[in-house]
Amino acid sequence: MDLLWSLLSITCLFLQLEGCTRVIKPNTVVVDVDMTLSTPSPCRNVMLQCGEHGPSVYWQKEKQKIGKGSELTIHVDDFPDAGNFTCHNDNGDILNHTLVLIQVTKNDRGEYPKQILQEISDQIYIKCETKNHSGVFECSWNLNMNPNTVQILVEAHRSNSSISCTVHDLDKSRAVCHELTYCPFQEEVEKVGFNLHAIDGPRFENYSSEFFLADIVKPEKVQIHKKDEGDKKVVMSWEYPQSWDHPHSYFPLTFEVKALKNKHNCDHEVRSDPRTPNHKVPHKGSYHFFTEETSLQLNHSTKKYVFCVRAKDMYCNSPWSEWSAIVLRDPGQQCWLKDYYYSLCFLKHRYSLCHMWHLGP
Ligand SMILES: *[C@@H]1O[C@H](CO)[C@@H](O)[C@H](O)[C@H]1NC(C)=O
Ligand SMILES: *[C@@H]1O[C@H](CO)[C@@H](O)[C@H](O)[C@H]1NC(C)=O
Ligand SMILES: *[C@@H]1O[C@H](CO)[C@@H](O)[C@H](O)[C@H]1NC(C)=O
Ligand SMILES: *[C@@H]1O[C@H](CO)[C@@H](O)[C@H](O)[C@H]1NC(C)=O
Ligand SMILES: *[C@@H]1O[C@H](CO)[C@@H](O)[C@H](O)[C@H]1NC(C)=O
Ligand SMILES: *[C@@H]1O[C@H](CO)[C@@H](O)[C@H](O)[C@H]1NC(C)=O
Image (tube, rainbow, N blue to C red; front, side, top):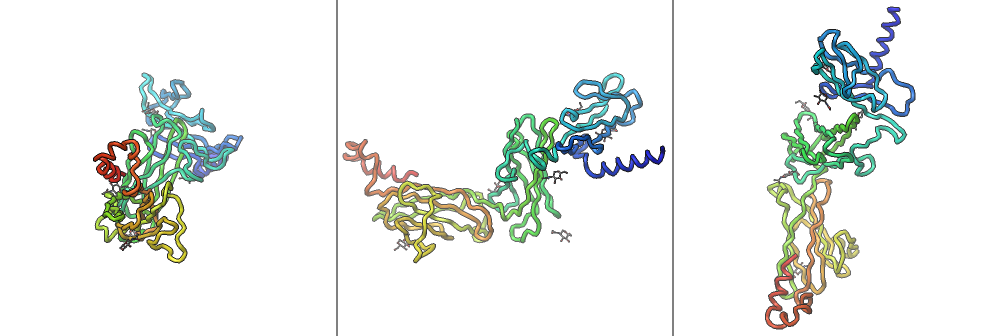
């Protein structure tokens, strides 16, 4: 009998070590449940411990008495078995508690099916980005559940450095992290690991993402300025974003520039002239090129143009900024206020109105 008992306890211990249950923080236990298994698994036993309080201690879950004694073993197979277990003394005072949560490891939808966050793209739930090389980065996700009931815990790490993260308290759908020791001039040997724990009622889910900071640098939009130089000449210039690193000579950006003829949006593809690829020569009236410079003189603004610029770190294989765009009209030909304000325009305000209009975006 004794032998049987020790065999049993060894088996139990072994199953316990297989990692069916784990303590994720004090008083919180997560039980991994494979929903495709019909037979209850012995590894899903959770021992609730109240502490040294004698035999009169009793346990409750959702105001219902469920057992007595300072230790109680419960079996967790499905969501109704999970919850917040409290132990009480004779007077009904709460002595201790254990929150038991379930992580579904498998169900008919596959391995680790997720519900609390929305999938952004195939198996991707978290997006991390930074506007510069300061070591500060932001991660965001979309909640499927009411932010008032969901609890989100995040943590980021990379060996030898400390990274602190704070979740935004209101929408709970983003976190700002800061790696204090980040040095943009040193090659990153190891990726940053970002982990997210989401708890909704008895449901526990974990999510993670891994990246090099240099790969997630996405500059903010550039500011475009336009200056009429007369004689159909227009000088377009653009600035490094305010949030980009200084000095700019150490952190150069590459710009993609397009001047698109008529009614195109910036994503419109311009095939460059095969004879002059990536050259500032218009092909069929539209420009498209890459440059490190921050201005361009357009010499024949006879058409309506959409002028687009976006930026990217020159040295990193990181994302482009969003496009910035401004619509150009030829000062000589187009003043669409003209007809409506004809008399006005024709008299003496015409030029000032046109001028005002063309200065605007
Ligand atoms: C209270 O419960 C937790 C588990 O939820 C347990 O780890 C801890 O030991 C208990 N406190 C005492 C004093 O036993
Ligand atoms: C679980 O119960 C304890 C004791 O009443 C309480 O402090 C704790 O906030 C509860 N946790 C949850 C998630 O309801
Ligand atoms: C971490 O620090 C140890 C000792 O300080 C060093 O040997 C190791 O190369 C460092 N690892 C990384 C990834 O920088
Ligand atoms: C979530 O937790 C399980 C069980 O501990 C683990 O096997 C899995 O790798 C984790 N997944 C993520 C994305 O962290
Ligand atoms: C650098 O980027 C971080 C994260 O994107 C941002 O919070 C911070 O304001 C930026 N720094 C400057 C100087 O704008
Ligand atoms: C416009 O003319 C100036 C001076 O001739 C020249 O330097 C510049 O490259 C031209 N710009 C474009 C976009 O062709």
